[in-house]
Image 1: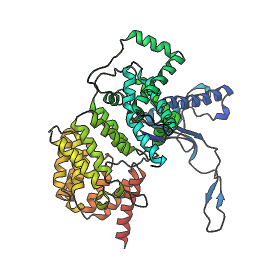
Image 2: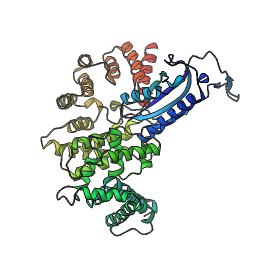
Image 3: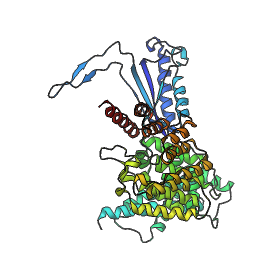
Image 4: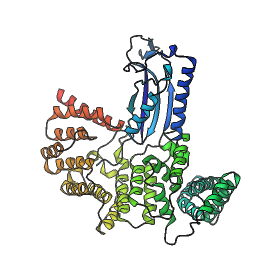
Length: 135
Length: 389
């Protein structure tokens, strides 16, 4: 009973095995990929392990406080930012092993040539509520 | 009596009747999954109907309505054929004299074929009478996900015979998880775990059930003192002991003493004994650490759990001094959760503040929850600012 974030990167992760950008796939390959992702989420809901999944636009804005009574300062996007998050899935599973197993399955989503992308996904545990009994 | 008080009483009554009503349906030949759904529907109808006209015999009312819901559902579709097939295949279970329905339900919902999270969810629904929505909120998952988890759990145990005795230890592990690893939502999971453990203790005479109940009560007694006004964790040694609930402590100690007198020691009784020794100390300084170390020795014999050895090292550090604690710690695997936090604490007590500060920072980095991380960061900051002045 622990929540994990499966994090997918546009940039910043090591290169995937089948590292062909999506804009060079065929229509059928794109459809197969989208279908795989949907089926994966549906299957996790069926196993009672799905919490949330979202995709993010690649371009964001940097924002910071600029002092009392002033509007926030905005900047960017910065092309040189190393790490760029593409999206995530949150799962609620019984063990870290199960989280790794599911991330492995998600990384097998088909890409160019209908072959698995083998992309690197980052598995991050949520910080939980503190246990009552510690001593 | 205000209507809100009435409805809370009704809900408490309803939820306490849930397991016996469900047990009756299963004994009449309903399969567990369908019976459980029918009882949930009956509970929902009771919440709707009772405020206007509460029945004289609440349990009888629930059994009647749940049984009607069950028959309606089985007649409604192909489920009827499945049920008839089932009835043809197996002889009706019939009443099993002496077997307690409530107890059987605990065994079923904690069946070893279930994963811990499934067993927890099924126990809270089928034994605790909580709705799927309440359970989903308590564990911060979508209702649809929790509904699937529960229905899969029901399928997993669908072939388990209802009249076979199970293992109390598996039930206790599930109740311990509900008590110890809950989030906070509308449902107070710690209180619910205590209610379910009390109900179990009424259904079976077993010293470890009593031990777990005592453990829960003794920890629950400290709840108000455990959290600072800003939400931060207050460690045991710094808690305002005047805020501990003396009624819960007295009850926990009484239950524990009766269990220990039976001379069938188990891990929950030993853990409760540690908690009772803390509860017994008027101030942190007066804690009987020597006896606590002895109980950790017992626990090590009973479970050989590395976390117990870590807690033992803390107790040795208090009983025999920080050097002895560090020596006990050195024998353990440093990848254990909270190992670094314990090392930081022992180095601080030993007067090595630079090492302690560095280890508190490292421990904060590894902390499995936000409250502990914040607490450990504060410890590091306290030592760092103190040293730089």
